[in-house]
Structures are given as C-alpha cells and as structure tokens.
Length: 296
Image (spheres, helix red, strand yellow):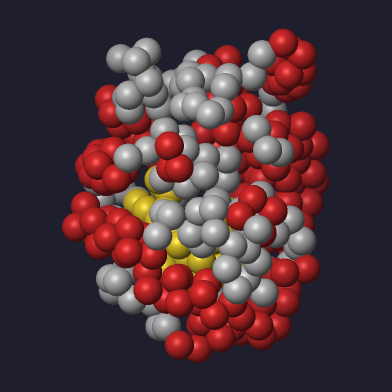
C-alpha cells in the first residue's frame, strides 16, 4: 500500500483509511504497509507506527495487516517489529538493512533478530535488484530450518526460477509470493501462492481477478487480462516505480502524485509517457473494474 501525503507532505491518515477499505472492498485479502512503495525510507519512526495503527483500525477484522520492517540498524528494525505487534499487525515483512550490503553471516543475523523479536509470522523480502542483498534459495532454506515463524518469501529477484528453486528445497514449508508485478502469471505457474502487488493501489479488482484467473488455470481469461495490464504492471519494475504508481493513482482519482524528497514527481517526457500508457489502458478497460473510489 502506498503512503498518501497531504498538501504539506505530511501523512494523510484520513485518505489512507479510505484507501485501505477500498482495496479490501475490491477483493484484496491483506494489506502490507511501510514497504518500498510506502516510502518507508522517508518516514520517521513515529510516522511508521501511526500509519500501522491507522491501517489496522481501517482493516478491522476484515483482513490482516502486515508491517514491512526496514531500518538502517538492526536495533531499530527490532524496535519497529515490536511496535508493529503492539499496533495490532498480523505479520511482518522483513527487509535487509538500508544502505549497508553485508555478507550472509551479517544479513542472517539481521533478519533473524527481527524474526525473533515477536511471535508474529514473518515474510522475508528478497529484492537484490533494489537492495543489493540477495538471499539465495539455500540460505532461505537455512533460515526456514531455524525459525518456525519464518513462513513466507516475497521473491522480487525478477527470476521466476527462484520460485521453483525454493519449492524444490522446501516443498510447502514456505509460502512464496511474487513481488514484481510483471511476473505474476509466470510466478503462479511456477508455484507461487501470493502476490505483493503495486498497481493494485489504483486497480485492485483487476489485480485480484488476474491473480484468481492465473491461480485457477484459466488461460484465456488470464492472458486477455494480462495483455491489457502489462504496460501498467511494468511500471512496478523500474527505479521510479514509486513516482509512477503515485502518478497513476492521481490520474485515476485513487490518490495523488506527491512523494517525499529526494524523489520528485515525474515531469516532462516521463510524465507524458506515463499518461500515454495509462490513457491507452483506460480507453480499453476490461470488463472487470474496480469500484469508484469513495469521496471524502
């Protein structure tokens, strides 16, 4: 889930409440807050805790809220994990530390400290493209053998073979989620059972339908919807994915384009290209459509 900012670039809690409920109304089965798309690196610790409390209250008993745990230090990551539990979150998505790319011994110690900070089930977020830290399948298997509450992996290496490699080592010990939007159909075919999606913030019903079609093996429906969706889904896999998805939200009335520095809103040719892709999609929308976004 994205983090919405108001005109003063403070967190817009009221909007995020409406957004969370709208996502659930359109079929989403859980919410992950404070991830990369949630601009976690630009949020203070207090802002992060306030967001978690707000989203947990918005979701109520309808769906689990998972807190992404990322920090510069292991100590801060552990404290955020504990605060997420206290805020009522149902699980944690554990990232490697910002900035520092350590070796396996160091990264194992970091994520295990977070795993062991609470009894909450944990998803490991493996994104070597963005974080330059790669948790290989054999290392994931080692973690799974030592921590019972390590229950899932968000695989964002962009290599769908990782899904089959993890399953070959661990069977069904871990749930494997796809973490890049334009690999969802291939990931499900390889055995993934979940999707941590990005464009879902603007197109939740369409995202849910794509996931359900692919999971049910409905090839015709899957590829018809995938062909329509792919130009948008590819926005989730480039360095400016945060800005692009926020821009799509603004142009679809499901959010705004505001991002915190050092990010800047897309402009010029980038903005034109983004809008051209979006408007082409909107001119040819599929039968399945998200409900209108609720007004204030």
